[in-house]
Length: 222
Image (cartoon, rainbow, N blue to C red):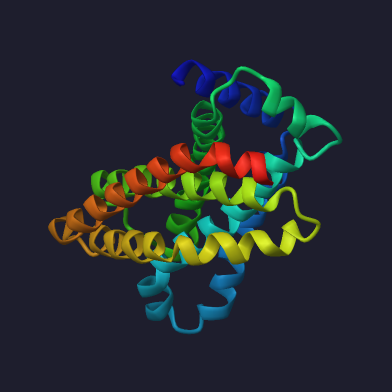
């Protein structure tokens, strides 16, 4: 399964490296959202600084929707999904590969956004260890839920509008926990944030486990 996962992840990352959609469209979109939030809240700098963790993760969720749509759009051509079903790749490996490739792309976007909130919002990344410890499981959970939701929606004609409706409610607990952990890190009280990071790790394990178990069935039915 791990070998299959690396094959799928490598394929997806090579596609993105050649098309540069992530760097050329998703990352600029995410930065633009941060800028617009800054324009909306800049008259009250205190509110902007207090809202930085939530704005950061909301932007990440928006970017994840675009990333999931892109990951499955390249496989929506005629016969591609039937060809995937006929391969010897395990469904669990395919899921892990899709999730891994999406997670790598999201981490790159989060790095860009991290620089953005420091420059635009004046955030102080003093608790960077907690920030990293939060970002890794949160990204894993987002990528796992996105990969499963993506395969659910890809076969439908209304997938562009259905995907956010499927994905965003599932990720609401991740948004809450990641925001609380980032608040603790930016406020200089990392001890209060580690329980939230642990909760994110639990979410990631649950989402990954569900994806491994359900991906094959969903792929056959979609």
